[in-house]
Length: 280
Length: 93
Ligand code: SF4
Ligand code: SF4
Ligand code: SF4
Picture 1: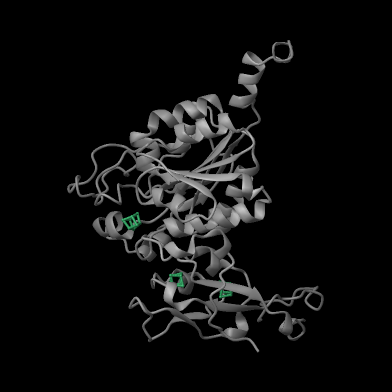
Picture 2: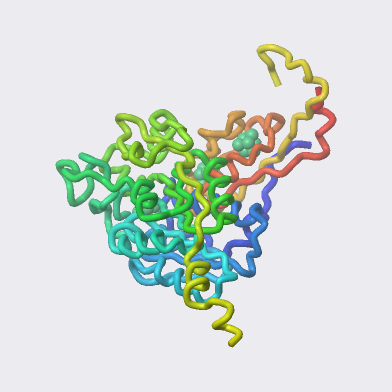
């Protein structure tokens, strides 16, 4: 018999702090999907979850760390990456995952991002980009598309947004990709690949914030997903300079960078802890 | 399943069948699973859950191919599919 059954055993329940579910994210918010893809990738990648930690900063996406049933840390605004860098240096065995939003990682935390990428710290950064500051009421962010409306740009955003994959690449990231929450399978596979990758991996996830960004730009949650379906182009290995976010022209998704380079810890050990020094 | 052209190996391919489970009280009614299920097997139900949303219901249970798309896109961990091993044979060929 093929039937719908009521059951309470979702396959991800083991990785969730069930006492905190339902989460605070609004109906249709894309963060939940990105979070779910991340948890599935953690499960399927085969990495040792006992040695995996999740670090978040502040903002709606920053709540992620509070829902995962692993060692997880909700840090101060913009400081998820330095906190995570410290953990990785202190215990290089850890798989360090940073799950946070565009505002946290690229506005207040922007400097930390570029330096962790420059050092090639071995960690996975999952950045939920919803084009505005959702938690505080939908103000303009460094990722808000040109002429998009927010509470603080009622006539449209006069500035141009960051091209995050270009920023990551230029700073030294060794793995860079971009997907939307509609491209669930690609997103999940990309996160899985990034988790297993040695080096600084960056995944940008485009996600709707229907309550703030969507409302002011006449986009219901489903409309945003249809835009992701109709106005995106998958182009692996595209050059990062082509990756500006402009939905009128089409937004490029895919895996853009995948390089092998010595990590921060390896370079540090080679320079500051040569074997002959250690055993003298 | 209907084919525009019968694939040459149609009698060898097993179509996986799935059973959808819905945890109704977790649903916030975004409609993603309903809109993007490739087999269009879900619809909003008319009843309300504890939080006042209309959760999805399965209208074409026999068509689920266990692709897990609904499971991954659901932001609320409210829906998932499992393989229907009992019905494998029926789906063959
Ligand atoms: S405010 Fe926006 S980003 Fe924050 S939970 Fe609501 S929809 Fe998501
Ligand atoms: S598993 Fe696939 S076919 Fe089945 S209900 Fe979910 S999305 Fe539809
Ligand atoms: S995707 Fe999840 S939250 Fe949205 S309608 Fe379906 S079951 Fe409900």
